[in-house]
Length: 609
Ligand code: ADP
Image 1 (cartoon, protein in one colour):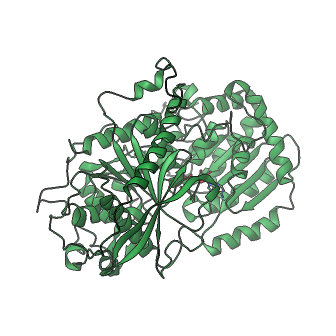
Image 2 (tube, helix red, strand yellow):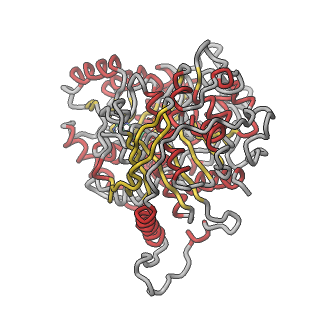
C-alpha cells in the first residue's frame, strides 16, 4: 500500500510498471470554441497590424463574360432550396415543402435550434474534399456533416468543390451545368471554366471545371501531384470569381485547410476593392502538417503579384527564403481561425505542434480557438447503416455480434472467442504506424484477432504494409486490407470489439468517434482530439459512466501495450465491465449538435452586422 497517497492519478503505463524518472506531462489547457475571445468584426483597418493593409488591386484582366444565365441559375437554386427544405422538414416530422396545404406538425425539439438570437445566415464552404463524393480522410466527413447541421438549423449553405474526374459520381444528383462561361483570371489571361450544380445527400454543391491544357482536376486523384499548389490556387481564384460574378455575397465563407487558404487573401486583396465587402472568412485547419509551401509563381498565376508585399513576415513569408506559406496567409487574412479540437489548438500554438506556425498563431491568438469535430449521426448510425447486415442500438447491443460474425466471414477469419482489434485510417507516419505494426503481432500473440483497413499515399509505406499483408493474411486471426473501402469500413466499425488509434499527433480523429458510435472500444494515445474524446476506463478522473475506452500517454510500445493489454484482459475476465464500457461509448454525444452551435457562434461573431 502506498504510504503517501498521491494527488495525481497514475497513468496506465506508470501503474503497470513505472519507468524510472518518467512523468506523464499534463495536457495543455486549450481554448474552447465556446469561450470565444474578442474578435475583429471585419478585417483590420488600412495599415493596422496584424492584418495586411488594404490596397486597391489592379482590376483583373477578365474577358467579357457571357451574360448571366439568370433563369437557369434561378431554376437550379429553387430545386436546391426544395431539396434542403424537404430534408429539414423530414427531420422535423413535417410534410415536405412541395406538399403544399398539408397541416404543419407540432414544433419539436429541433426547432429550438433556430435560435432567435442567430438569424439565418448564408454560408459558402470551400474545400478540397466532401463525403462521400471526394473523401480522402476526416475533412470530407466534417464538411458534409457541418453543412448538414447548419441547414437543419435553418441556415443556407452552398459547397464549392473542384470537379475532379475521380468524383464518386453516383452520389451526385442532378449534375447540370449552371454557369457555362466563367472566365477565371490566370497569369494575365483567363481560363474558361464551367460551373456545375449538383446535390450531394441533399447538400447544394457547385463543381468547378476549368478547360485548360493543365487539366487541373483530371488527375485520377484528389491530391498528390507536383502542382497541387497551383491546382488549388486556381480553385480559390475560380471560387471567388464565381461568387463575385453570380452576385453571391455570402455572409460567411468557410475555408478548410491549406488548399483553400488563398481564398481570404484573394478576398481581401482583390475582391473587397471590387465590392465584395460583405463576406467574412472562417478558416478551419484540419492538420498543421500540410501547409501549402510554394514560390512566387502562385502570386503571378492568381493575379496577386507584388511579391515584396506578400513575402513579408507578417503575411505569407517569413519561413524558408523564397517560400510562401499559404496556410499562414489563411491565418493572417481570415476573421477567425480554428483547428478541430481544443487540445490540438493548444498543442499547435503553445507546444510546438504547428510545424513552424506557432508564432503566427500566437500573434493571432485573439481570433484563434479549437472546436471539436462532430460526427454526422445520420450517416454513422448502427441502427440504419446500409453496409452492415445487423442493425443495432445500445438497447439491442447483442446484435452487434452478428456483424462480428459477418466480418469474420468476409475476411476469412477464424470463428473463435477472441476479441477483434481493428485499425482504420490513412497509412501515414502521423498515425503511429510502428505502433500499429506492433499491435498486429501483439494481438496475434495475446489472444486477439487483428483487422487493418488502411490507405496509403506514400509508396514506401504502402509497399511495407502490402508486404506485411502477404505475411499476415495466412494467419486465421488477422487480416490486412490495403486501400480505401467505404463499404468495408462500416462493417469493421460494427464488427470489431476494439479499435486502436496510437497517433503521434491527432488534430481530432474521427475513427475513435465512429467506433464509439458503433459500440467499439477505442484504445488511443492521449494527444489532440483523442485526449478530448476518450476517457480511460481505469484511470480517468471522469465519472464512471463517462469512461469510454483505454488511453495511453507514452509514444512507445510500452505505452501501447499498457492500454491494449488491459483492454484485452477486460474483454476476457470482466465481460460485464466490457459490456458497460460499450454502452458508455454508444451513449456519448459526439454529434454535430454542440460543435454546430460553436461554429454558429463564431459565424455570428464575425459576420457583418
Ligand atoms: P484523417 O482525417 O487524418 O485521415 P480521421 O480519423 O479524422 O483521419 O478521419 C478518417 C476518416 O476516413 C474516417 O471516416 C475513416 O473511417 C475514413 N477512412 C480512413 N481510411 C479509410 C479506408 N482505408 N477505407 C475507408 N475509410 C477510411
